[in-house]
Length: 268
Length: 266
Image (cartoon, rainbow over all chains, first blue to last red; front, side, top):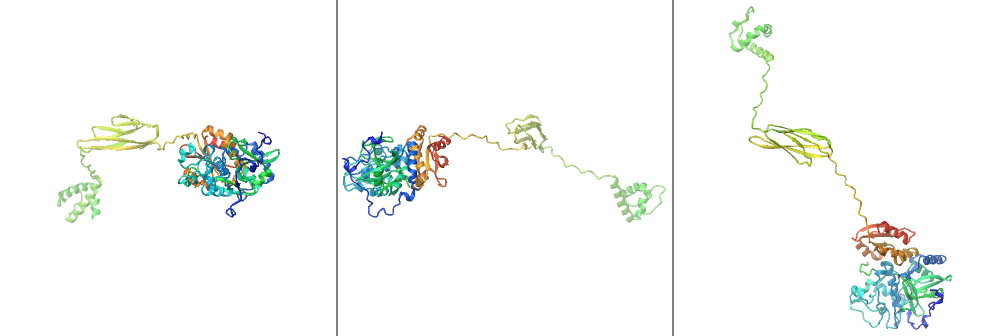
């Protein structure tokens, strides 16, 4: 698909009927001491980025291939929970394989960080909750067979947590997350195949790839609006694209996860 | 005086023997023509000593007499070589007073037996025992002789080629996720969702990327320890055995990775 011909570039979320709330303002000083991506990974010099992008595309693409499931938040303001859920499943696919990805319940994350179905949430709180509490598997027959009643639906803020849910949720925690604070760090993340959860215009999405369009950098993200957007990887829909200027806006405060714990309960 | 007696010669000697045998006072029988000498009892003692000495020179002492042989005492002996070469024929003989004998041997090579003689040959080295049994009227006994053929050499183990290691395998890339690069990420995508994934799936292999700083407990359960050679590929077979461990070196690519998998048998 020719990206310039479709309507999913630089979507103005605030004007979209799916508009929901997502705030990226760090929660007070909670994350002031948190490591930045550039503290751990060598930031790729900007002069090398386009060449690496070309190599990536010649090799077949980026982390869009790790997407196994397109989330749908419906009319709830749970975008932050959905974007975090998408990122965690991408990491599962990277570490354990697409066949071993456990579909996760986005509402089990959002309920920890939002105050109501449409309150929206802070992206930084998702980083915190995913590292310290985790989330439950999605309510599917396969997951019920594995986790019994310790599952939750994708949506439904009023759905109560099952009793004792945290014991299962901790199997689906992030193990390593890092803050992204500029476009250079974000480009490095994406070229290293680390997804980035961002928030812009009140909506939170997960960037999966930086690529070139007409010689200019663009950012492919996975949304949580079901059969919305363009195809990518193995999925027939679900993706949107941000231009470099919108990407720059998104990169001012974001975070990435580079490792998740072993959901089979064997994690350290 | 003693010398005078010795000068008397052999004729006198014979007379002296008789004198010695007969006792004193036989000097009247002195040889004809000899000077007559009257012997005192002391002289007779001297003569007796001389005669005894001279007789001892002429008549050898009686040979020691064998102790009487007990006809009922059983004798058993095997004579023959103690060693032989592989393939060499040798014989063992029974030396015995037993009227009946019997040979016994435990070798898988049967000796040729002919009465008191057996003939044996072994094509292989080893130690062979031969037992000879016999009896007298009052007892039964046996003796055993061991013949060493060649130098016993422990059998050379026949090299058995290792059973070919075949999949499907559980593949584990053990790596420091803090050192992930675009190259590593691209390799992972290929192995997860592109041509590399197709190959792994066709062989039934599974693949995981584990960081010891996060998945130490899992690695311990898998029997994968040590991080000195990180990053490396650990290949585990169906029985749970780590069949290979190979360090991964740059440049990282799905092609190079799959070559390692194929070398491991997958």
